Length: 210
Image 1: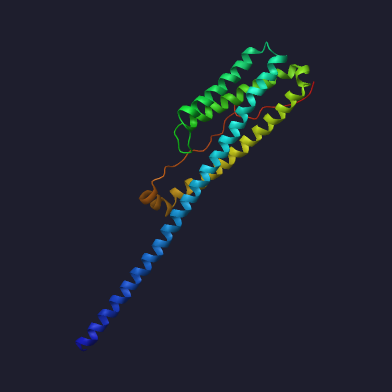
Image 2: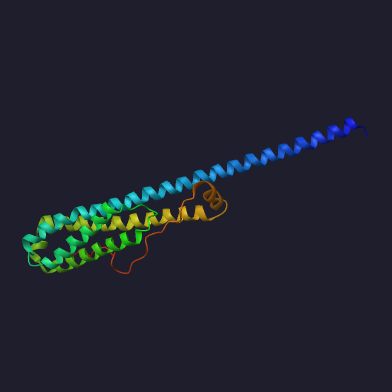
């Protein structure tokens, strides 16, 4: 075999190897970019879902001062229960102002506990007010009860959607090859979902029976 033929064979093999490496590089790059963008998309979904959770909780907080004012007129001696609701609301507001809550914040558990405390205090207040028929006949009070009931339902829906978004996000950053892409390029942490709470976060029972 001539040296010319040997040289051509060597060059051919070299071109094949280089072509194969280039193809592998392109495929890997596409996979990495695709998974990078997918993780980013699920991260944005978590952030958007968290904003909806905060909005639902804020709507409840905004209704409480009006509820307290209406109740004061007909059930002024329920000061202790009213005070518990007002103080629980203040604690939630203080944490939001001082700490700031983000989806991967280690303060989520504390935030959830404060919100559960507020929900529990609100439930106790509404239960006590069942024994005030004159207050239940007040149209403003009845309207507030309907709004509160709707808000509690929104909170439950927002929390579920947030947990669904968290599950998708955590799956992306823990499964191959997303775990490698995240470790090398993004370094995003695993995020905690809202945990099931026994009783304290249940929606207040709103009835109009005498």
